[in-house]
Length: 483
Image (cartoon, rainbow, N blue to C red; front, side):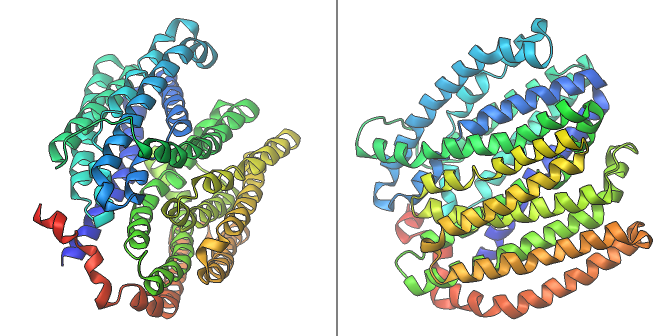
């Protein structure tokens, strides 16, 4: 029951991270006019890009450090996070005027300067709540997430109704950050300490700095495609694409929020048990492509109906767009996990950064194709090619670390790719499947096939990976429990 409760908290946390962007988007589209909504989107894209580029995932360094140096590693991570916050805040201030002039108007540059306090506020977060993941403890994070996002959304709604301007989003970001940081200090058991001396500083920097290159690649992938759509296809298509991204790719953050901690903690706790470690790798390598296929199928079945139902009748994507986005999402999930967990757990952050630059090739190809044939599908076709290249690169880079599970990863990721491809082609070519109910029937049939396949191929590695003799890693160490 304790393990089930912990997994339930993690699932709820992932659902929160999926649901919050939807709620935020729906509120902003209702309380802001077209120009102000576009302004808010520009602020969100700018903040997201800078945060991704400078992300160092320092809490993962603490996770990967031995328990006997836990407090030293935590204090070191806090010190580096504080330095990062100061530097990124200065970067926001320096860029606020040119970015404001380029994206909106020079007279409104101060709105971008209001983003500067955010990284400084967030740098004061007590990272212990994130490190609890090592012992499968997710409730403190869930509490902080629910309360902080709830307060932020309430303030955003109030400011939006009062002013009708983009400052509603700024208010949300600032209030959410302040409440979240405050709760991390209240819910943590180890006081917030800062340390910038000692051997762990160099180790933390060597671990985390390569992740900035990884963040650069992620920022280009998540924001670069939007810039291309706006430049080549116009703002109306960009609006449709923003909703497509929100409903297809953004929810994968919640999916990764569920997969990443489970795999990372599972590998860390099995390091001294090679047979269990190998079994868990094989389980993850087989299970993740199945999860990715189920997610992509869900998108292909639901997208054509729920996008216009939620966001308005003008947000209707073509069947080809839905197919290509489904393939992109499938490939992104497969190239991200379990490769990311393995590389982070083994300290291979530099290799992780290299692997995550590969999709930029697809973005470049997409830019060429959309220039030749100015359609949204042209860009998406190039991105599919880039994701395939990225998956091959990720599998190649991580081959030695996956061991015997590498063959499982290759087999599963290529086999289950056929499912969203076949269903998407079916929806594209058979007009009678255009209504929702026929699509739902096809999706339910595929779900049954996936479930049966999962029971067949996952049962044995699951028993080996989490047999009763190793369940103790779902509990905190005795020393910590006593404390």
